[in-house]
Every structure is written in structure tokens, then in C-alpha cells.
Image 1 (cartoon, one colour):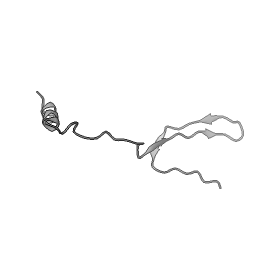
Image 2: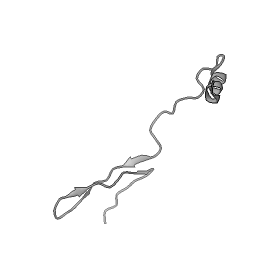
Image 3: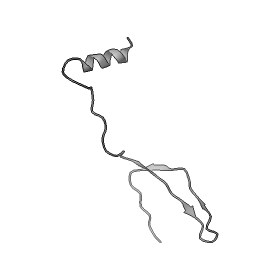
Image 4: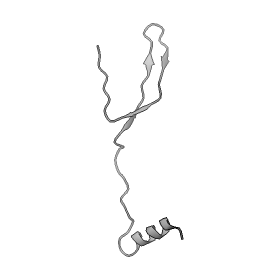
Length: 60
């Protein structure tokens, strides 16, 4: 057996059950999907989504 399989068998042996809990809930950083739209022509394009913990739009 490979090393990872041996470790997994060692951890799950006996009454301990599965080695670690599954991560629950949402991810800490979400991908922000923006759409830039031209005010004159109405054309739109969206840049590649960036990851951000906090995102806010501020009107000038």
C-alpha cells in the first residue's frame, strides 16, 4: 500500500470513524462577477472574476 493509504487506514482504525469533518458552509472568499456597461452605447463586457472577501460599490 502507498503511504497515504496506510495513514488513512491507521487514522480510521477502531471506533474513531472518518478522520476529519467535511468543511461546511460557504467559502470564505466569493468570486465577484462584474458587468461593465457603457452609458452611451449600452454595450457590456465582464472582466474575469476576482476573489474577494468584501466587495462594495460606491456612487460618486
